[in-house]
Length: 480
Image (tube, rainbow, N blue to C red; front, side, top):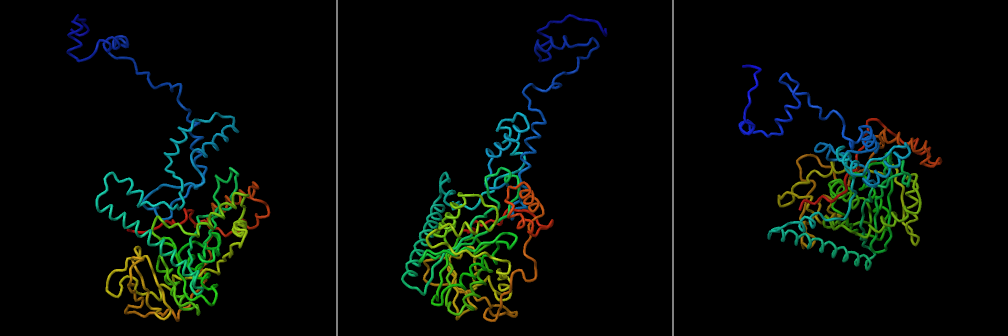
């Protein structure tokens, strides 16, 4: 009957229900006498070693206090945001410990800081480095195929060809003063201000740019410098700096050979080609321009020595404003100092407009084949054939392919009759974001920036519609 106790064999009972004796004993001990056990009391009290939620909040707030920017090109494919290249987790953790000590609180260990950092979807911006992804990929292949080996050997051959041709062109320009061989490159972004003050890590800074053109025969260099409130650093801006250099060449120079990396957004594009066509047509003494590209991942050039010299000068003292970067560049080499031109918004020309008006065909060569711009290694522009662009996919190829830029049914404006207009004729120069402007004003108020530069930062144009992003990537864009 119900409620009647019946004695059974313990072993038989446990084996029938497939349970252990310990579970039976525990159930009897926790029984309330009404057929139910007591409530589970586990999880009601936090573990003795659990980190308080307030401490975790301190870490999260500290990580979020650093300005993080979105990528310029990959906003649609990723939500990851990037911190400055001058930061890393150990450095951030040291700043966190300092802040906690000031508050009289005990900091957590770096492992917990690193764990919460990863949860924020952050990464550190890595500026351009001459590291060949193609070579690294080949070295990491577990068992390369014959095709992989052949592709890699072709890559190394192209690297050797580019360096040999650069050396040959350099020697020719030494022997012939009518020929000029130069290499040019855009230095990685120079931040202003740039000091050792820890406060700067938490603030956005003004980006300064330097396009250096290096004469390989004379070892002279021309530096074109500006900051982001003057102009951007797109293809028209880069082309404007190189055009300025070409206009300043001596009258006896009739031929120029230019070497650069393969960055498609800056110097291997139709806008830069439009500049070369315009220059060879409108500069009276210039008869020919050759533009050659180093192999992707192996674009080390003599112009890199200019950027290294500027970096060395930076270490001698703090930089508070763009004007000090310009001074540092002038002081970077004592013997035969570099020529530095401080670019203004009016100095930048709209070569995109020239490309739209004058270059109607950019896809098919004379033979009807598709022009693969990302594989071009040599472009040639000649004064008396201003409607043609000569190009090669192989630097050692004996013959050029031909692109007729006027092959179209519509109306074409000749480069000879075209006139280039200022880039910012109809639009205002770029503004910085309001968030960046406010950060710069905070640095002025805290005197992390010297008082003599406060008026400059206060005068910077700013807008709430401007979005803070990482600068356009200047990495090589070969599609080998």
